[in-house]
Structure formats: C-alpha cells, structure tokens
Image (cartoon, rainbow, N blue to C red):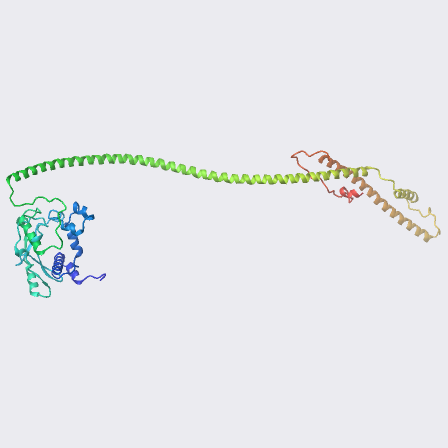
Length: 467
C-alpha cells in the first residue's frame, strides 16, 4: 500500500542493525522459491545491487552488450572476471559460527534459515585453500517462525555465543581459489545444474594456481619480477613527483598568466565599455539629429507650401490691385474732369442778381432809425394800414436777410469744398501714378481714399460727382 510501512519493518530498523534480518528474509525467499518455484519479491533492489557490484564494469563483458544476450554474457563469466573484493569493504573479523551451530542461523520476519559464511570468504578477500567441510555448508536451519518455537529459542541462545575468526586464522587477503575448492564448485554445479548452458569465456584466462608450493625457479623469477616492479614503481613515483612539481609550477604560472590576462581583460573590457558608451551616445545623438533633420525638413516643406500659397495669393492680390489701379485711374480722370468743371466760374444767376438788387434797394429804404413808413406809398394812409404795411415790410426784410445769409453760407461752403477737392486730387496724383505708368515691382500698394468726409455739413468727394 502507498504511504504504508509494515510494523515488522519498523521493529527491524529500530533494532539498530537491519542487515541480519534482511539477509535472513532474502535467503529464506530464495530457498523457498527454489524448492517450490515462483518469483522472488523480497529485497529485489538489494539483490540487484549486490549482483551488479560483482560484475565487471569494462572490458569484453561491457563491449558485448550490443551483440550478445544478457544470459550469454553472464554464463560466459569466470572467477577471473568477477570482482570478488570491494575496495570499499575492509573486513578484519568474520562471524563463522553461533553456539553449537557450525554456521550462522538467521531469524527473519517469515522464518529461519542458516547462513554459510565460509562461502563468502573469497568475496571478503580471503583465500579458498581447500574443500569446505560438509557441516559448514549443510542446511542446519530452515523453518517458519510459528512452526517450531523451541528451535527459535535455541537460535536465540546460540546468538549469545558467537564464534569470530580474524586474519590470523583465515590468512592474508588474496582473492584466489585453490584447485581443491574449484573442483568442489564444479561438482556442486553438476549436482544442482545451472538454468543456462555454459558459454566460452569472453577473454583469455590466466593460468590456474595448482598448489600451495611453487618451484624454486618460479619463485626466483617471481622475486626478480617483484624487484623489477618495485623499481618500476619507484621510477613511477619519481615521475609522479616530477609531474606533480611540474603541475604546481604550471599552476603557478597559469595563475600569473591568468592574473595578467584578467587585468588585461579588465582594461580591455573597460575600454570596450567606454567605447560602447561613446558609440551609444553618438548613436543617440545621430538619432536626435535625424529626428531634428526630419522635423526641419517637414518645416521646410510646410514653409515652401506656405510660400507657394503666399505667392499665389500675392499674384491674385497684384491682379486685384492692378484692376483696382485701373479702376482708380479711371476715377482720377473723372475727378480731374469734375475738378475742371468745378473750377470754371459759376454761371450767371438771375435770381441771385435780383436778390442783390433787392438788398441794395432795401438798404436805401431802411434808414438807421428804421423809419420806412413815410417813404413807401400806401393806398390808404391810415395809421392802422401804415402799421400793417410796416410789419409786412419788416417780415419780408427778415426773410430776405435769412435767405441771403443761407446763400452766403452755401457759397462759402462751395468754395471751401473746392479747396478740399483740389488738395485731395493733388494727394491722389502724388500717390497714384497715371494710368499709362506701371507700378514698381515689389513696391507697396497704397489703397486710394474712395470716401470723403463732409466739410461744414457740405458734400465733398464722391458726393460732389452729382454737383
């Protein structure tokens, strides 16, 4: 089940050393499945780890993985190909027995089974000198825990008396097998049978060690070879020392060169950064100038368009002013003609002469003391008629005086209007050239005065055209 740990597993790990229990469960599962058949499900990762640790990691075994099957590669292995001793495992003391048992009984979670440590001596790095005893590899314990409680108690008592052997008993470490042990293994293979056929070795095998003693010439040869190897080792050590010294020297030089290179690189990097910043500033300035140039070009185009529009407008205004000048020239000619007509003496007015005669007559009739009644003939010389005649004469005289004053005032206005009209014509002649003379190019065009202001409540200018 997911996220679930068995109670028995918790107890095993709380005991401090789970290795004996795991080894017992593994052996018990393998032994029971070998007799009854079936698949092993107990400690598969542990078994795979142990099995792969014994296989070679280089050589023909690894090279043939693409050309041969897994079973063929495994069945072609020999004792020379197996990595019997792990360099990470330096075992000095080995548990060889417990109590009256010649081997080691193990108690697992399912049952009990014995472990034969004599078969693991080569894996621990010791020499197999001869065939093991039958009691050392016999099946002494194999049962379920609930089936034999008395036997379980016996195993518990046996673990209180452990038999340990060290290097002084087992000998020096040298992971080889003598011929007696090799022959015993071959017999066991013939009895138990292997699940696959035996394959030829993948590489050349070294000669087997046939006995514990060797001939004297072989011994001398081995000594000479050993001496030669020691000398070679010394030479190799010297070369290694020189190589280490050279490496240190080269490392020191490399650090110096790296320091110089680092300082040079920093200076170059600094100069490159300054150049980059300068180029960036120049690029920004170029962009600004491009934007300003585009803006100025747009302004120039707008100004050119405005100038063209102004030119067209000025041409229109020039044409209009030319037409107005032609019109004004005609008006000036007309004004000059009218002026000549005004300058001519006024025609004889019979009414005015009559009025003047009457005025002269009245001056003779009316004395200073206004006694005019005796000088005029009356039809009836009565006082009432005389008074009435006098009032009538005075009324006529007053009317004549008023008409005379109005006429004199009108004549003064006409004379003053002629003077103003003459001055206006002179100003127009000074400003506007004659009709047959062209205006100077580019010169200002003065607008002619087309309206006149009344002078003393009398019409002048355009109003005088109808006089």
